[in-house]
Length: 417
Image (cartoon, rainbow, N blue to C red):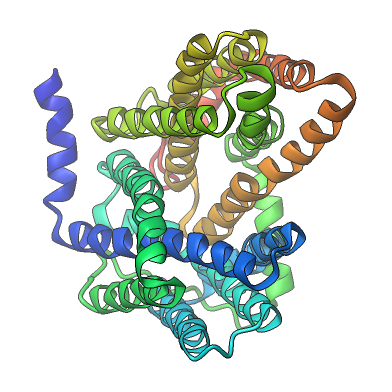
């Protein structure tokens, strides 16, 4: 069984276009994390003001929330491979300007904010395009494995790049560290010119429709689809009420467990380990059958693990629950993305994946703001437990609809049901 499972990973990685794409994507993701660390430190050096740290993070992140519907509509209109090349090239140029201004000493916090905001806008258009490309690189049967491998690449970059960025900044400074991002992005662009899609997708003729109409068509499609609509509801609820305890980990590490920054580092690391294990286990799967059932099961795992984490004052018990949360979060995210890619009509792929990125990136910040506000009145633990109990209600709701969800999600649109 293990041999068969492992073969799914190797078969997917043997596809030259996907393998090359993942190599380029890894360097690009690593460059993104290095840039986030470097810009955070540069902002602090320029201002010594925590408000500016928050503002810079908002400039990087918030455009994705605002632009996601438009980005998805454009992803369905344009040649996705050409669009990916264009977006990454523009991002590399913006990063080059940041490097130049930093090395010449001309950078200011205002110019940095403007450039980070511009890059955030560009990347908000890039995300749905990147996600949309995966099926055209590997085909349908390898999709689950491919999305999981993509998650592995993301998690390895998320863990490794910041660990290397800190010493690099300390030794060489912010400018030289940021040069890695520029080189990584241009390398990715070069690789994208070598990539060929398994199936060339011609964007449909939309001369008589406007972008606004296509955005509304995307919303209508999502809400009317018997599987995708409920899937997005599950993702919203988990992102708002289940996941936000991650943003409150510094408070738990210090106030609840009395471990300070070292405890925070331990909790963050074990969360990453759980995510990595979840990515590996899903990468070994062949096909799509049974994914809906696993998704719904992991909503319960996430809920119970968050309750266990918030209800204990024992650091090591909390570590075990954090490991389980990391696993469940990745399982939910990877399976949601896979099932959307499978069930969606190709003309709607970019729009549906833009909704996925909007929810996955936007809703946790809403939840963290809500939980943080409530924690100022009730303490850290009760709001987190209450949110997890709401997630158990979502699990009950989804479990009652399991058969309907399997029927509508675990089948390709052009296959007879």
